[in-house]
Image (tube, rainbow, N blue to C red; front, side, top):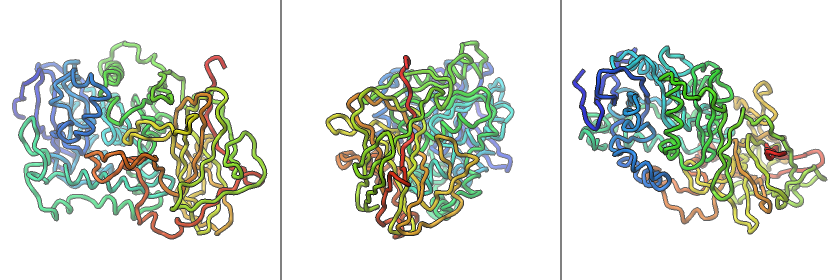
Length: 583
């Protein structure tokens, strides 16, 4: 191994080789204290090119990060800051080694790209064990990172590498089918947007067509420049593989977390605004992992912000100091759940809780009335209301103005009785809040700046439930068979609406919109694109749209949808109402 590059108070090993069990050499950058001591390692394995600076690769996200958290610009030089991984200038002085590994086929690591595959999980296992064996490591390895760097933490933890001591999966999904690719069985567009962008910017072999590291001057996507044909041969056709599998099968399960096999201590950190990709995974991970020492934290704001903030770094440091350094800092007495409960002004109230769902939840079933398009306390007489699935904004059912402040925090679900003029229907649910003047309350989501309170989806032909995995508050669909509708005949749909949190003030209204297409914020035409998601307009759901003709092109999804309420069809909404502290 070459002598380290000593600069800025760190000893840095660029492109350290890590041999995988099949002989392939992956490349890592290692940042550590410049002495002969042994330190715990914080490791991340992912696709975004370890040598590509945050500001260099994601200028829009960087600007927003500094607007939301100006302290980030003052704590370090940020020269070593990369997308969605820890800043070594903050962690090395605190007594940690930071290891960034370019995943197989990405950045400066050769090989074939197969995102979130079992091969990647095994690679990460080998990287953990490699780091633990280095002379600068004390044998304890922690995992940290956002999104991709969080998702594969769930995967490798189930393999139980001996030297994995703790992990912080920050905003990372757990279910490849339900959380990313097929919301409620409805195929999404994120696979195309994400894969297209990454393969054109950081796939290994882009060479001189990619960026140069501002730190080393080296090409961040590998030293050689391959042809388009060679690049294509070095990756699976990720979108095509997903399109070919509209039902949940073994291929999807191989890329999903085996939560019950996880026993390592972890802090799962979610974002209420991640209601179309990551949030469900962070909460499912906390609920279903077998770890005895596990914590859940849910925050607000943009996807990348809280991780780098002083608050976020302090939280992560306390956790790792306890589990990687063995410090008695009180973390073991920390509440198992810590939530930032959202308020309609864009703020929040931070609050500890004992568990999830919150044990004191008052599960409150409200009923839909098609005759008045209202949400009421009891089911009324039979009525129905219809909308054109693809040519309208659907139907909004609303409560009267709240007479008292009401907190909704937890999983939400709906029971709808629906018929269609065709043999299927895609149902999009939007949980919304409206101010007394009729203005909708929206939030800065993980990606989109105008995100509603909550989302749910279900393709009606996927309505069959798995009773073994359903709970009172969370329906679970196996998505393994298709049961077409009989045109005009109502069917019962149990629809999961992803967890949310909002305090609805007196005078505001809570509403449920039933649609046949994606939600769009009314002012979306005035919102610019983000450079790192070029071509994806921020219309209320960010890049998490559902327009893929392969999934949505059939005429069955373009019919007239009817919602039946009252009488024999008591359509309803189940809300997690949290009583006031003195209630």
